[in-house]
Image (cartoon, rainbow, N blue to C red):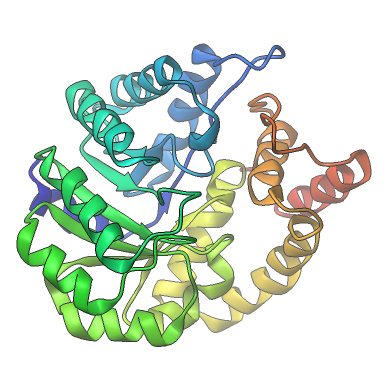
Length: 303
């Protein structure tokens, strides 16, 4: 699959980030991960991102990273494209990018370099070096310390033919509009704020109809129904799901930093696809929060 073919796939449909399975000791649980992917793949997501933020990319050791990507690629080879999360310091991100390409990932999601603040030019140089280290398509994730503006993204798009996508995790509407208007159809655009469903209608109005769903991990049928309602501008269905599920869900998710991942793992456990605990520095939901989430999920019916 060349970068332009991947760009076409990412330009429509629902995307998601499977959680990464750990056993009781906190080690990668390959069998559980295979079971998860085999369950989720048929529900119709356009692509899945292995070792993404919801997949606890930030906590994986190098050998675990390779195992996660290889497992995802091998399991989903005939069903859904796999993009691999990469990030961290530039040379580390390049090593991961090349490893993911070697293992058969169809593309990359370039996550922020995390701790160190850097100039716009420095971040652009980081992105360019990663893009030029591989031939597969790259989607950049504007979030946290990675905050590229439209001018630099346009320059990167000219210099890096395999830079095919922009994922917004900032929620800066002015920036999103300027990027969308400046680059037009050169990139595909993805909504990437936590619990993206809450912002989906607004982003669709901005020309960003595609987003990644975390709740697809445990209520895939509902997640797909919500996406189809957004696409069809079925405001009644969208409003009902936001009122009945997403707003109460946000009330739980927002209680502690890091719960955007923890609550997804809790949801997976509730529906019978336990992915194990989150790794430090994240913390799992408290028992009363877990029970509140279980009631919300139960109201959505069988998945």
